[in-house]
Length: 189
Image (cartoon, one colour):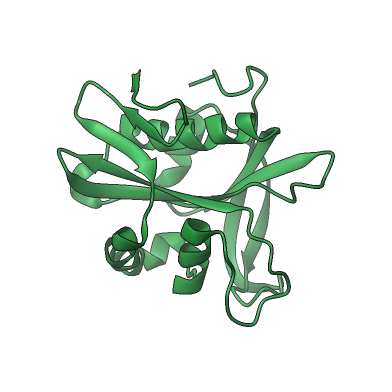
């Protein structure tokens, strides 16, 4: 993997894949892919993606602070996937990150692309003092294999939750919970 910038925002690998921070021009692709994969990803509103790009939350929200980031993966100039991650409150002594969504379009799926996206998340987390991460993955999805292959530990289950900032369990769909602790502080991947 070659770093093309002092910032962890750009990583290119030998296969021609490039991972970078998302920009506003990437939103149509991200929204389209998230709609196509809604059964796997769940629903995240457009304004959440916009906030992860701009750092500014809009609309009726419980907080103006945005601790989210959004990356995209390109292959030979074409977008093939994205990851949306949150890094917890910057004022907290113990920051815990969360992978809200990670998706590679079906005709471009490779573990290495997902690993590259996660590498950026973990590296960015290390840079800002966030070394612990969690995520949820519906029990019935093949994606559980991905999380185990990436070394994330299964730590429990819960039922699906509402997308309306209520965190109420509103679905009977079981969600596996995964945890990752980065002892190498960004150098694991």
